Amino acid sequence: MGFKEDVTKAGKWLRRNVIGGPCKYCKKLTTNVTVDWWWHNTANKLNPSNAGLPKNQMYCCEKPDCILERNKEEQEWNEYQNEERERRDKQRAATREKNAEIRERNAAIKEEKECNKNAIEYGLRLNDVELKELTKGKKSRLDQRESWDKLIPKLLVDAFVDGKCTEDEMLEIWGVFDSPDTISGDARRVCSALITICGDNKRLPKTINEGASWEEIAEGIWQLANAHEKLVEFAVALPESQHSKEDLEFLINISEENRHPILLDYILDEEKDDWDIESARDLLETKGFDDYPDAVIEVLDGANWKAAAAKRGLLQL
Picture 1: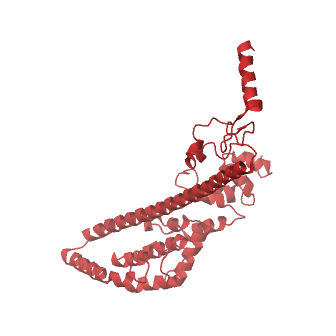
Picture 2: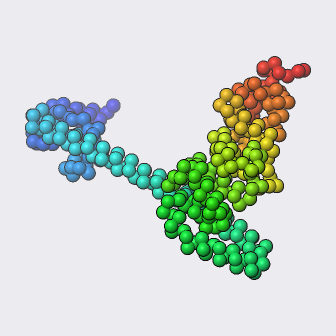
Picture 3: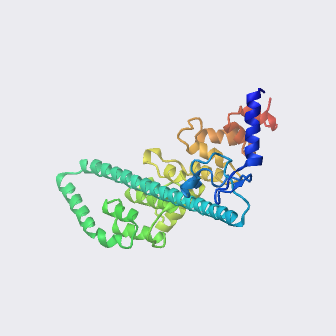
C-alpha cells in the first residue's frame, strides 16, 4: 500500500475513532456511529433531514435527549413499515378479488355466448311459427326475471330465461341445494351439470339410473365432483362422447387417496395424450400395477414400465 493510501486510511480512522462527527440531534462531536439499518433508505421519506447522509455515517451521541430522539425516529420507521405492509396486503387482496370477479364475468360471458350459439342452432331447425313461439316464451321469462332474481341464484335464473330448464326444474334444482342465495365452487359445477341434463337427458352420466329424482341425480353428480374437479364435465359429455358406467366407476375408484389419483389427473388432462381409460386399465389390470401406487407414479414420470415391474418382481421373463 502506498504512502497516499496510508494517509487516507489513517485520516478515516482518526475521523471515525478520535474526531468523530456531529451528533445528528445536538451537533456535538461524537465517535458513536448509530446503526443505520432502520433509517438509511426509506426513513428519508419520514425525515428529510436524513437525506444525503452517507451510509454508516449517522452520528448519535449518548445524551439521553439524543437517544430519545433516535428511538422516536426508529419507532416512526417501524410504524411506517407496518403501514406499508398493511397497504400492500390490502392491495394484493383487492387485486385477487378483482381477478376473481373478472374470471367469473368471463365465465358468464362464455356461457352466454354458448347459450346464444345453441339458441341459433336450435332456431335454424324451427319453422317461422315455432321460432316466433320460442321468442315469445323467452320474452315472457325475461319479464319474470326481476322477481326470480330476488331469491334464486343467477346461474339458475339465467338457465330458466334462456330456456335451458323449465320453471319447475329451476325450483327443483334450487331445492336440491337447500335454496341458497348463491351457488359457487363445486356446487356451481354440480348445478351446471344438472342444468345441462335438463336440456338434454341423454347427457345423464351412465352411473345414474334413468328416471332418477333430482336429488338422486345431484348425489350422483356430487360423487363425480368429489372424485375430481374435471370428472363432472368428462361424464356429462355429448351423447356421441358418452362414457360407459364401467369406465366412470373405474375413474371414481382410482380417485381415492390410497389408489391412483395422480393417474386420474393424467387421464383427465387434455395435454396428456399418452393416457386414457384404456391405457390406464392396461397398466393396472393387465400389467399388474394396481397394488403398486408408487410404481404407477414412476411410470407416469417416464420410467419404462418393464423396469418398474421387474423392480417389484412383476415381470415374467
